[in-house]
Amino acid sequence: MSNQQVSAPIGIDLGSWTSKIAVAKRGGVEIITNEANFRETPCVVGYGPAERNIGEAGNIKMKSNFKDTVSYPARFLGLRPDYPMLRSEKKFCPAKCTTKDDKVAFEVKYQGQTELVYP
Image 1 (cartoon, rainbow, N blue to C red):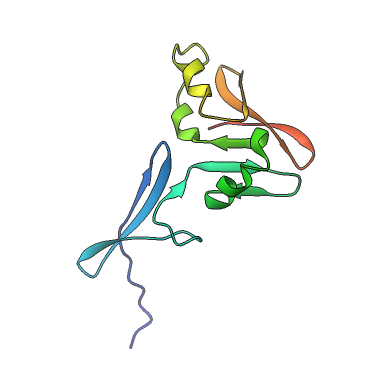
Image 2 (cartoon, rainbow, N blue to C red):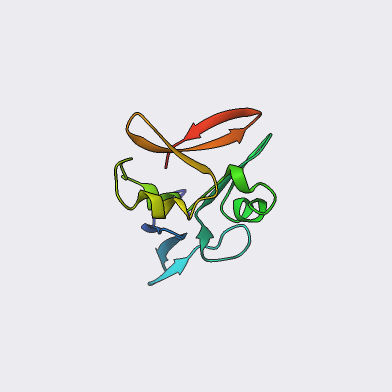
């Protein structure tokens, strides 16, 4: 037997609300489950005093750390501050939405400091 590694193509779906990862193997496509055994992972990042929670963990922490949670950041990708629909898109994100250097950013408190994060 050889130590040759076999590679398989993967697909990543970065949706507005959830993301999925799939791998082609055994003549089919298998969707990879996340740490909570779900096939879809929420597009959520929660920032806290000592940690950053991504996906399911961020979604769970959103209830207790609402203001420092960026939810559905893909909706903001490529948006400019003068985009007319930006006001309605802000409704989907609990973190404070602001602009810097002509880009949309989110103001969160992480490790005791106020940080700007970009989608």
